[in-house]
Amino acid sequence: KQEVTQIPAALSVPEGENLVLNCSFTDSAIYNLQWFRQDPGKGLTSLLLIQSSQREQTSGRLNASLDKSSGRSTLYIAASQPGDSATYLCAVPQGFKAAGNKLTFGGGTRVLVKP
Amino acid sequence: DAGVIQSPRHEVTEMGQEVTLRCKPISGHNSLFWYRQTMMRGLELLIYFNNNVPIDDSGMPEDRFSAKMPNASFSTLKIQPSEPRDSAVYFCASSALLTDTQYFGPGTRLTVL
Image (cartoon, rainbow over all chains, first blue to last red; front, side, top):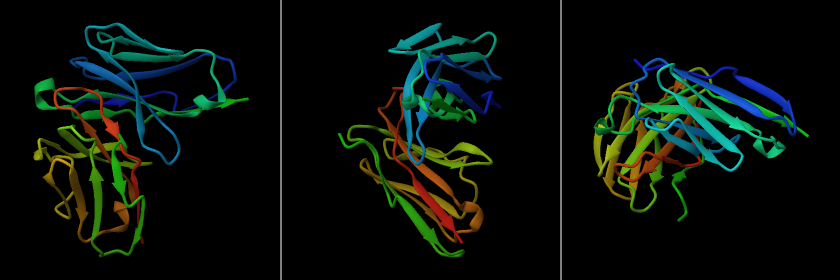
């Protein structure tokens, strides 16, 4: 059974510092990995999706890398801002794509960026 | 598009009562997912539908939980009878068939007293 772990569970940094968020998964037979953001009291917003054939994906200040063989993904947020404060979750599909996009989520990392 | 719509946003009920949560997916999306989020267990998939057909309900915790999707624009998650341990935030998400990105609704915060 796939298990997804995110360490640390919480992170506090001063504004301007780069953020590094980690995600590890036990079964490397995944076809993609997604990073989501969740604001308090809100639903999840998809940030980046990396296909298994890619090593990284970038969107603005966000960069996500994927190393399937080691079962790891890292989300980098450059020059953090107070508006980046949120919980960040990674998720991987269960099984093969033909089986449907059932996601297993990590526990999330709660980020606080202090002004 | 208004995004995924869920109602109610908050529900407080007493143990033993029936609870119905509602979801309207994004127009044109063929896949719909129901999730539950708690502090202890994180975010868990309960059930998902493709083209209104339930594909996998292995995450549904007990027979007290049931979900329906009578048409492409509406789904319900029902708990009968509700128990305090059902207290959680329930999310609905939708995606276009054969695509990977899921779009989440704002959630329904359920409190069972």
